[in-house]
Image 1 (spheres, rainbow, N blue to C red):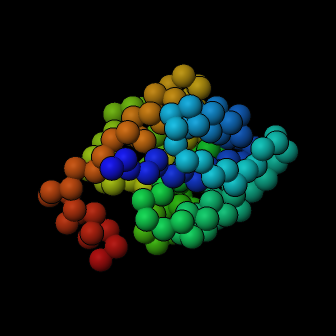
Image 2: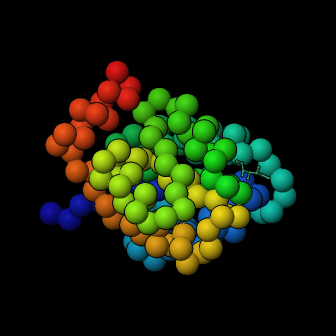
Length: 148
Ligand code: RB5
């Protein structure tokens, strides 16, 4: 039986909109299921508004959906996401951190800085993050302790 494609909720502020457009294209090319909550133009918006909208949509999806958020640095989006119950956000600018955040932390939110990483590196980070599974085992108890 074929498994369903990973569902990703994308969001960006003006600092991350160009990078989000690039990653949405990449996700579609990989056959992933995309929900894009915007923004899609460069005018200034407040990143907490976008992050909260994306995380609300993610909550409504339930199950194994994940979130990808882009702002200028990736920092603001990660701070907002990590205040959301059940969300484990990682701000990545390297492939190793992206991979380990999945293997050991079961990170379900990836944030990236459109003013930090170029499209090529961001795509490598993104590919690693969407394709790496949580290792479970000893890491399950540790992740459970985050919310305990
Ligand atoms: C917007 O200028 C910038 O502050 C925002 O994109 C983000 O980097 C915040 O963390």
